[in-house]
Image 1 (cartoon, helix red, strand yellow):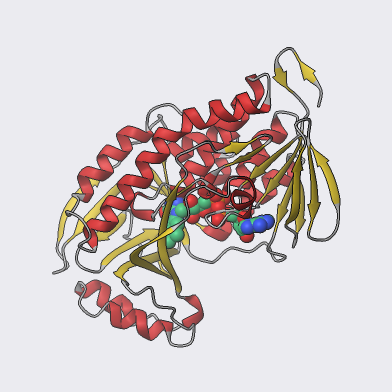
Image 2 (tube, protein in one colour):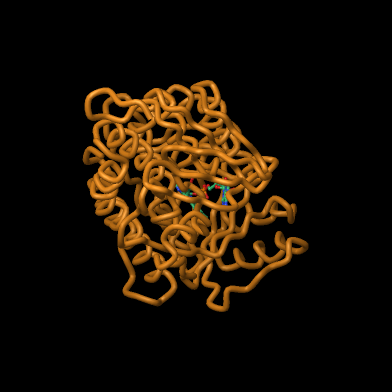
Length: 378
Ligand SMILES: Cc1cc2nc3c(=O)[nH]c(=O)nc-3n(C[C@H](O)[C@H](O)[C@H](O)COP(=O)(O)OP(=O)(O)OC[C@H]3O[C@@H](n4cnc5c(N)ncnc54)[C@H](O)[C@@H]3O)c2cc1C
């Protein structure tokens, strides 16, 4: 690995996981002149078809990564959150808080559109992407890491980044004692619909079954539905649409009307919600973790992917200024821990309040507080 002054330059870096955190890291690190390989376990490198909310701190991060225009073109910006009660009546329209001039407060974007943007940008920046492979062994000898991949290929790299999500195999390999994901007792269901022309905000329906409508393009929105699922059931795909329609039976009239359009079992995305925060170090030697691999949050504040994107920028910045990988990794974790802890713990508090495992949390106040936290510089 060549060095100029104190900073690390042109390191060979292996990123495990081609999701949001892995790809934003690849973009940041390629632009800093590193030689980046991304390996992704999924041979089809696909993501499910519903959407995601990115708030303005994520758009600020996208601006820093040089991909803001792509983000804005691939999604739909919106500034307000409308709150509805189970009767269907709107009780508030809460303005959002853009963290920088010219940015919308929020952006709804389809996961496939975001994945394409990040994948295309990472490859154009020079990242080599290998699909359908994972790691078999990692051996860190202090001067570098010898990696054997599942297809038998052997690599020697300077650094490894584990961006392989909540069930991170890299975490298991290098931090086997670290915290594990825990099921919360709640699950989320998602489904796409045509977007009504007047849907210009995130619509949140409070009640025992929480519902949200999120615009993600000119003609598409998705619905998310949170339900208590204390026994963590496994629902077969066949029949999922009917189960979701039944879950919506007691909701507001406009939601029940939409529920009639839920007919495609394969279009329903069901996900038990889990949380996890690694409270100790986020690295071991030359191997570091980011994103859901170290701080998987429930989606109640819509910030999980945002934290992964911010991690990527901070990790690249610390690698650019530190003398050793370990110093960079420790500085990166120090800068990121408090914000990620706040997002994971606050989201879990909201989740527990919704299912009676804790006191109810005022969502509007929690969202305003979260905006104040994430608008601080990273
Ligand atoms: C229901 C739900 C709704 C959400 N909504 C939002 C939202 O609105 N806004 C928001 O900001 N966040 C949201 N999130 C959180 C967000 O999806 C995650 O925080 C984000 O995807 C984390 O990115 P990541 O790159 O760390 O992990 P992932 O996105 O999980 O990516 C990990 C990648 O690594 C690959 N991989 C896994 N294991 C291996 C291996 N051993 N070898 C090679 N590759 C491997 C996987 O195939 C995957 O491509 C939501 C999460 C859930 C569950």
